[in-house]
Amino acid sequence: MPALKKTVLTVLSAALLSVSAVCPAGAADKDKTEDKLPKPTGPMSTVGGARLGEIGTQVELGPGAPVLPKGLSARSWIVADAENGQVLASHNAHWRLPPASTLKMLFADTVLPALQPKTMTHLVTEDELADIGEGSSLVGVKEDHSYTVHDLWLGVFLRSGNDAVHVLSEMYGGVPATVAAMQRHAEELQALDTTVVSPDGYDAPHQVSSAYDLTLFARSGMQKADFREYAATATAKFPGEQKKGKKRKSFEIQNTNRLITGDIGVDPYQGIAGVKNGYTTHAGNTFTGIAERDGKVLLVTVMNPSAEESHAVYKEAANLLDWGFSAEGKVTPVGELVPPKSAVAAKGSEPAAGADKAEKEKHAAAATAAAPAGSGGAWTALSVVGGVLAVLAAGVFLVNRRWPLPDLVRRLPRR
Image (cartoon, rainbow, N blue to C red; front, top):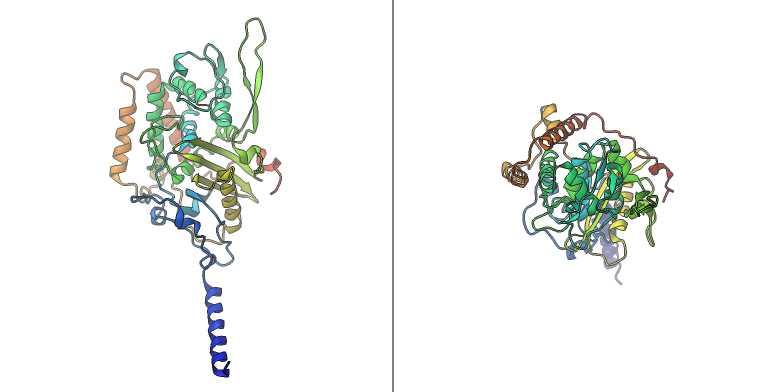
């Protein structure tokens, strides 16, 4: 090879190496999986920032930041700091998709404050269990049996029991009233991607949420001590059938959140503290989790992974949490988790970006239409009390970001 040609090739090679060295982390090794994933067909909301309304993965890696996990197959996901609300990375964060049982987080955040004390008992009737969807997950609630509110919430959080959801909804004032209250609460949280049709997340026409909204529900719910307790409980005793002439026995129920209890191919996640998993035919697998490590608290939501491996939703969530704990402080946030409207008003700030009037009016109308005719009296008072509690909680949302996570997060082994 002539000396001049050899010199030119050497210079070109050095130049190419230099270019690849200064490229942003991960740019040269972009995961091609994203190109094969389904994409939103219409514009998405920009609540929390313009980047969150863009299609595809949004991340701004800084010096020393790790690249995102390989092989992420979820249609939508988000990783955020639970305390300051910074969104570290996202993928189609505002894509409106069926939420499955992750919608129970909104149900609990809406209904739980009103049904107190949790030692209150309720005798279940046949009508309260009549309209549960076929193939629903159940905890084993039986008609003509009494349960405490505490029992029923364990059934909701651990076994994702739609039977427990329907009984609690009736205690709150009925399913239509509960759906209306959930819609109003979603509006208060600025979760404008969400349309509630069924309180348990069972597949229903037009029922949707988003990774962004589900993360808002988890963040709001974790402000409440009872919510934190239920979300982090691994196992519990649930009242069984009362047989004539015999003492009523209980049976053990286990949390279906595999990052808490583990399963074949999935280890319990170090620092996990909840929150909720779900599955339906239309939604696929969905999951929102919260974990604490070295004083940092992160939220992650993963919706409908297409990977065929077992427990893909948990594995992708765990990988995103690992990435988030390594990347925090090394990335530029691509958006934020907005505070509740009442907290914004109390602070004298403007509503969240993208919270357009048309969306607000649509959800307000849906909530009004869902309210049962003639509902009033005690249930109206109950709704008012629930609303007041929600406002009070929102008022301290920005000033009380630290919350004590359950002991579970300190008991699990480090991964």
